[in-house]
Amino acid sequence: MNNQTTGNHEYGYKAVLVREETKKALRDLRSTLPDRDLFQERRLATAALELVIEDAGKSKEALYRLLARTREVVVRDIHSKTEA
Image 1 (cartoon, one colour):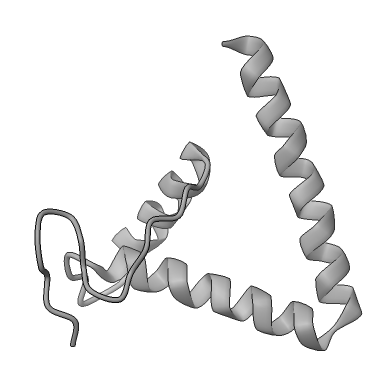
Image 2 (cartoon, one colour; image 1 turned 90 degrees about the horizontal axis):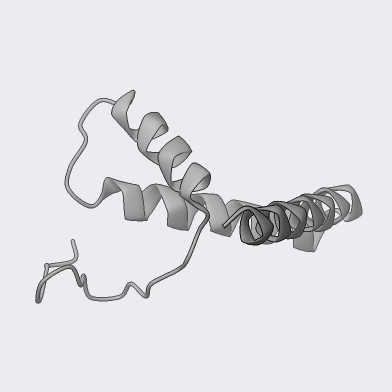
């Protein structure tokens, strides 16, 4: 088990920026799970990224889905900046 070190830092983890709606969806998912702990959100995000990377490395279809979703995120980013 990783021990919390200082503030919001947990050994072995690095910050990753995600869109606000993604963070909310992750929190919503986390709230439905039993045995939540303070850092489970980090672990869920790590597991999700690992699965996507693993699948994209094994399957062209998964890679194409990842790239298509990335393009959708770019569009959301552009729309967010023009609305701000």
